[in-house]
Length: 338
Ligand SMILES: O=C(O)CCC(=O)C(=O)O
Image (cartoon, rainbow, N blue to C red; front, side, top):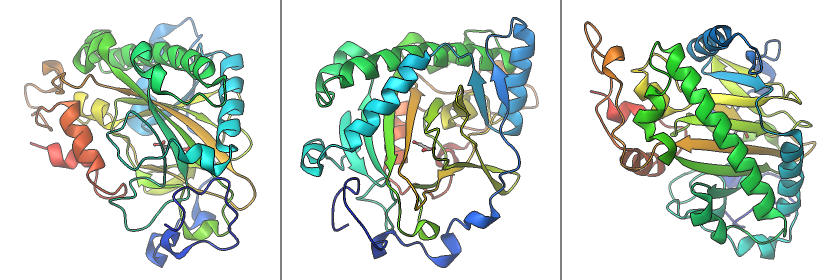
């Protein structure tokens, strides 16, 4: 990379280090925009129905949207506005936070894993650890001055939503409500956040914001820019564009829930594409197992005729494997198969 970050820098052509081989390009005209992923209303009083809808979405898509999710509109609006403000800061200001070391608990970086990848991605991102807040907040950015207040409030609300969803996912697998949460480390589960910024791209057909990947964590809660679409998921071998919806958050199953469900729910490939018209922003919140919790499917899902698809591991071990590679290689869970 000639510059370490791309937000705030003018490009008339896509630098060659971002150009994918012809066979790997996004082929944007072939993407399906006719469908949308399931929308689940969490305020529905019929809990059995909600659990059944969640189970079906997890089996068929690995993705769903939630509305009436409990994260306030005020908080959503504020974090989007603040994130734009952050990425519009002068390059020198942002570079004070730059690091390409994935083990850092707060860093601004670019692309995905610049030390491991051969082709770069058209994205800058600020990655934060967010739980426990009192441990990590002191190292968060202090510019814009509202950063800590806005992000901490958003994180707390998203965490509650994530824990509720883990309960519903547990029940949808026929398990006790608390079962999945317990395996992942109960309330000690960690939480990370990526504020993703994809600047307008001079040649969007040649590159990605993020190439196809699955998420290494348990559950992802994504807030999408309303103005600019870019998230696409792989469904039955075709890429499907997820239309941003004003009142919704996008949820996807990560690798850890795939492991805990013994492969019944899939951590689905998804990607972010870029466009020439406008920058795009997304806020991804990740619930992650506590570092030492033994990750394995409960007996109810891996007994009788059903063998355990994955060996037991810890998230610390998994995370190290995930970040030791480029992003769009084979599914990281393949390394943990029995
Ligand atoms: O920006 C998006 O829509 C996708 C973000 C994503 O997949 C990620 O942060 O892992």
